[in-house]
Amino acid sequence: METQQSYRPRILHLITSGDTGGAQTHVLWCCEGMRDAFSVALGAGTDGALIEQARKLGLPVYVIPQLGRNRPDVGDLWGLRRLVGLVKEVRPDLVSCHSTKAGFLGRLAARLAGVPAVFTAHGWAFSEGIPQLRRWVMLQAERLAARWAARIICVSEYDRQLALACGVGRPEQLVTVRNGVPPVDESLRARPEYGRPARLVMVARFAAQKDHALVLRALAGLGELEWELWLVGGGELEEKARREAESLGLGGRVRFFGVRHDVPELLAQCHVFVLASNWEGLPLTILEAMRAGLPVVASDVGGVREAVADGETGFVVPRGDEVFLRERLRLLLASPELRARMGAAGYARWRQQFTLERMLARTQAVYREVLEASRRGRRAK
Image (cartoon, rainbow, N blue to C red; front, top):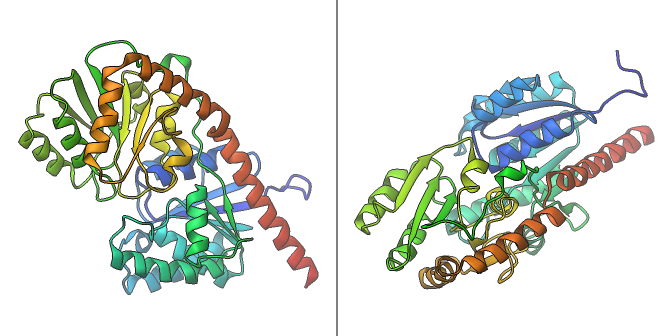
């Protein structure tokens, strides 16, 4: 039995999907990186890679199918009941919620069970670029759910300012903790100035959030240059992207890799990282590309500009602007020296500002502040 001195506070992480994704990777790193400080359990709406990895770490894992439904329905009431029961069963000192569905139901369940909650917004569902009706609905939901959280962690300052401007949460409730990624072996550093043809890579799900078609159209206008494009990821829109590549006459220059678990190895073989998006939080894939020493060209959405120093570590381009994207890619494809300089600057920026160690330390500090406030509140009663 743990003594008072050795007691580790219990944290229950909740997330909508247990599959692969940026938020899931973030949760796994938090679970693994804070095991010495906290006793950790994980609840998710679906099975998948995150759940599999959590089990390998020996963490208590709970799958709640009602949590995995994307659209609201009557099953949410049963899911809420299950969540309240789970919180009472696990008896955490803190519930840490991630992603939209788990963020809403998890915060409400924690409130009903009398446990403090922290919500991490991995990009808001009411950000610019999201369809207008969905934005309005999610804004109302987040305004309500903010009342049930002791703290709301935003992964970019853009998201914190957006929340304040939209009336989601109070200034003292919102805190920015930018994403970070762990180091990799030095052998996985790219050499963006060497090798032909220049190889571009985009690591992203084929979903409405991402704009693979924009990248394909931009590159179709650069046929005179030597390049090839690697597309890494899966998703429901992959076949549509394949047809787009064929229709543009790019079939022989575009490779589709599907879901991969060796992304650092793939990045090390490339020369330019590109990410076209309609909305974002602060993408882990951009930070992984910077860690690899690649110049980054990315859409100016969410917290992207906080990671990519425009003109220094890569280029930030207006969302949906095919011509602007094409010209920035042309500059990098035509100049190995520019790729090398920007890639080195991106690597240095990652080491200074976006390491996993830095992110975990700041997240843990938020958790401890909430736990201490909860203890003071109980003692005052």
